[in-house]
Length: 115
Image (cartoon, rainbow, N blue to C red):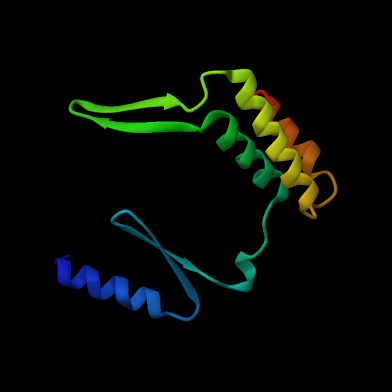
C-alpha cells in the first residue's frame, strides 16, 4: 500500500466507534470492542503478568550489528522480590474467579517460571 493509503486507513480506524486503534512505533493494531471479547481468563492474566515481570524485564539496545538485550536488574533476588510484591498487589486488588491463583501458579511451575 502507498503511504497515503496507509494514512487514510489509520485515520479511518481511529474514527470507528466499535474498535480501539493502538499505535506502537509505526504499527497500528485495531481491536474490535464487543461484549463477547470482555471475558478474561484470570489465571492466564496472572501467569502473563508474572512471566513479563520475571522473564521479560529487559532492555533492548540497537547496535550497529544487531540488537542486545540485557536484564534490567542483574540482581535476580531483587528483581524477584519486587515482581512478587507487584503480583501480590495485582492479585489482591482484583476480583478473580475462584481457583485462578492456583491455576496461575500451576502454569508458572509447569513453564519453569520462578516466583
